[in-house]
Length: 328
Length: 91
Image: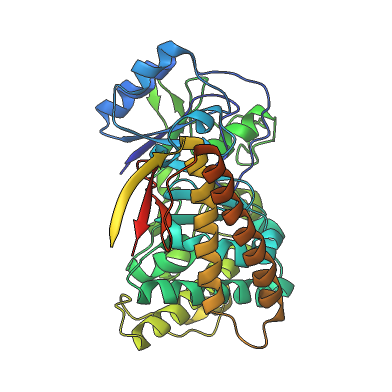
């Protein structure tokens, strides 16, 4: 069931997830389109998430934007960040590791190598955040040679988290603490729990599909008629996701048996790397399982310190469920 | 302990010291996980804590000079991050 409507206010709206935004020319969503998008969100009872560009919007947008409850997603260099009260920003996206984070909710978008290299600086941010999301921007490049370093970086973060939890603070770090709380899959949900509307008034599974369409990346899923088109309906005729069941967990034979519940299961990366929306790549599975196992380590440390840490995470001996598929 | 309001800084000035305060706290948390074999973390902490401490003190020196806050022997200044107010705290 859809729960969230992501509204890209401009072609240059900040990238907040795995895909980088290659669009550099401003193309603001027309006010009429914005109103239609908000009306769609109201009628479908969706939580609105505005994704802001790096410049101030015209004054007449303000009243329309605030006509409905919303969450705002800003880039760190966004014009608004410079003069609005930072702590009132809902989510700020950083593309590098800052010395301090001004908001309580932030996303760090980093290549894997930078995440590993900056593990101590990231750990030093934890005492002052409510929630920090790490979003790796080059999952496709992850290789077996990085397993040890990635695990070590997670261990560094675990050590700081342990001390903070023991002192009564409970910062959330998506790749380590989410798995402690989850008892079922909680993934990307593009096209299932959330949908994106772009400045052109068309729906996309997520912003990355819009970027691909705009930059002419061929849509390999269109077997009969090659094109880069990726929209799944528009604000006038409504949402039209072909074979939507093929995005869902119950149609994902590997994922529905997996317990890396926090895994991103990024639909866009799935399509890019496996040619199937519903099947994650080896790289995605490996990363998710290294994180799952690090969450298990954290859980054991917390339990030993008599801090509540959720349902027991079992020990497993694989990093990619594909390797043990016969056991299922 | 006595606490007396002696001044106020601007929002930008407050943001600067709050960033340094949070950085110093974060580095102090890192110090708690330092082990003998982790030379990489040791070197980072020594360097960063030193630099942050210097910047932190520099901020107070510059602001005290600028605003000429009241001071007292054995007293110290505190800032309220919500209101940007500066207090003189005396034992």
